[in-house]
Image 1 (tube, rainbow, N blue to C red):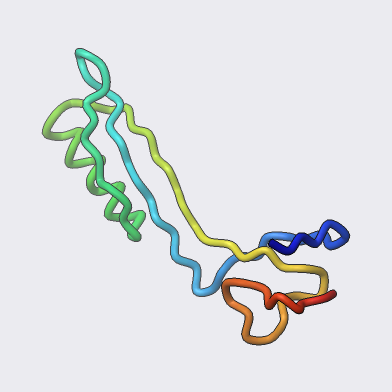
Image 2 (image 1 turned 180 degrees about the horizontal axis):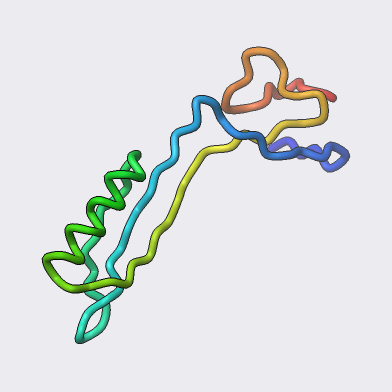
Length: 92
């Protein structure tokens, strides 16, 4: 394992950005309903799912979680062609 304590890495958005959203129904008479969209990559579809669920169940309280990817980069950016792992011989 290689550590780079002297380097201040910062997160950068990965392009093209793909955001996943997961919706969970937390309404219900006897605790959380538990119905979920699972992870989907269409926020509009998540809203439509919540609307349909509300129409069919009367449930109005949901938990939403958003997930996106970022890449940690050193000052000046990543070396060319690096997408997942720094080379073992990498130096700033």
